[in-house]
Amino acid sequence: MNRTVSRLLTGAAAAAAMLALALPSAQAAEKKDFKVAWSIYVGWMPWGYAADSGIVKKWADKYGITIEVKQFNDYVESINQYTAGAFDAVTLTNMDGLSIPAAGGVDTTAVIVGDFSNGNDAVILKGKDKLADIKGQTVNLVEFSVSHYLLARALESVKLAEKDVKVVNTSDADMASAYKTPDVTAVVTWKPIVSTILESPDARKVFDSSQIPGEIIDLMVANTTVLKDNPSFGKALVGIWYDTMKALASDAAAKEHMAKASGTDVAGFDEMLGTTKMFYEPKDALAFVNGAELKTTTERVSTFLFDKALLGKDAKSAGAIGVEFPDKSVFGDKANVKLRYDATFMQAAADGKL
Image (cartoon, rainbow, N blue to C red; front, side, top):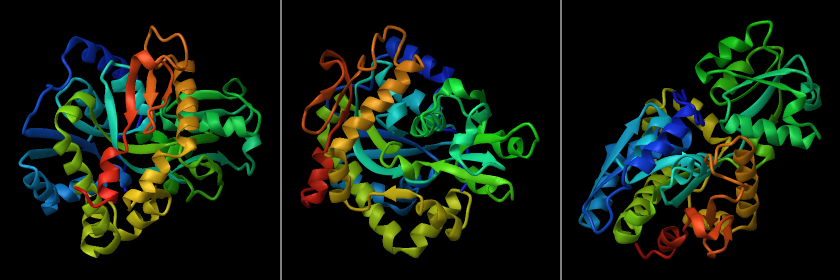
């Protein structure tokens, strides 16, 4: 699969935050027409299939609403559009949800916890077999992305810090070719780039996201005000998702559709799914979102973002933006909660009450 866009935090994040403050959030009060944005990534391919197969229409019709599902080729732009209020919901990672819409002042709710990276993202060294050998090396990665976060966690595991390496910002589009040059000896990236680089005889994977399970999380989030005023929208979203999960798990044609749309074949798509922990059943997603580890992860991610000055210019601590969990506990500023994990709709799916 060709992940044609990078899950990253760049100047676009700051622009989105300013735009969000200048424009109103998605219109409040009851409405009938909704817009959902998604971008190409293995864990989000079900949204394209759901739109093409009629699953989206089925659930929208059930609740007397319309849902437009739009694919973006630029991941950051999809989040910018959501942050500006042009879309009611968007697919993004936990880290980007905190640093872009939440940091931009848009109260955002995670309606669906779809999966987490479980080996898709990796640290690769050239001709070295141990992670500790990274010390003193120049590391090529997409700066401020989940790759940057993975590097921080990897270094921590061997009692090193970012000051022990030199980070060079490198586009994901250039990563595979950059690795082939003599000067590049360490990279952090994601599949399918990881798979391409590992074809080189001297490439050694020394750390991957399966060693920090549950920390790079893929979500479907919605504007909190829109969701509060239109609970049918949330119910429709989870209905769509779990119907599509059934298709992915049991329908060969559905999987083939998703593979082709992502630029690969079924074998390639299966290889990606193998390093992605998909929550096919709502009970599995509920166990994850209600677990204590999510709170620990949130604190780690918030600390990383604060250290990189990505929680907003006025942030004075890692807890500057409050994050609420299903049990209503909050990490960070309770007076500034802007990201919420809400299990209500997934619970309704688990209980058969959609």
